[in-house]
Image 1 (cartoon, rainbow, N blue to C red):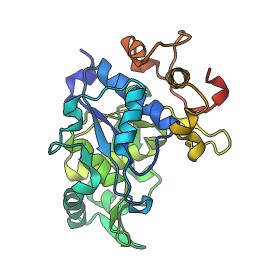
Image 2: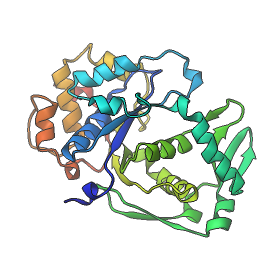
Image 3: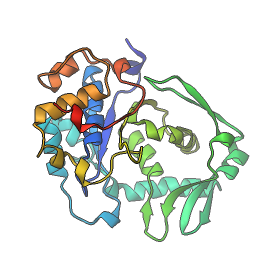
Length: 287
């Protein structure tokens, strides 16, 4: 049995209900889904709905249907595991505040510019220069020194907007869901040292990581941004099966010319064949 399956099983995807799915996000979700099903893990869904700047409208049901159109099949229990619903971040604010209060009581935070931030100097004073070993399933294991992580302050909570930023909801939700493998884009690798430090401080379970390659904008050399990359827009120009094949093959080493559907791809899926480097989005390769 692989080391993945020896741990408490589970992974997840996070979706913002206030925006449309980008084509890069769809590729990520397809790989997460394939990994989960191949390893007989549940794949939970987390609703990232705390950014009030994006408005109150929600199109979560539409986003789920979009993924289902590409062959993703959610089990009923995967969508009804947390108080008969998926995890909505906005409903867990009180839980996040309990963990933030613990950090404040430990005196490892500072209040600066309307933010409550993790103060790395204070953390070093409490824990010493800890070494964090990242266990990644497709990349080489890496060891981080907290003192060399490149951060002085990590914003955790906006006092002016009364909103949690990425870090605490991420690690707390992963613990609540019993996540054993945290799957995300390789641009999140620099956050491993911070997230694992927070887990140590808060007494949360460690996780394994699988950092996926991401689709990049050739001009900005960053993640795809903008409406032109919404999957709705892409599907007005290309048929669904062509888009599916492009997404499956663009970040995966395979000799197959095409797949009939997602299930055919999943049948021989091996996470070790996922490419280790990100690549540029090229719609000319969608055939």
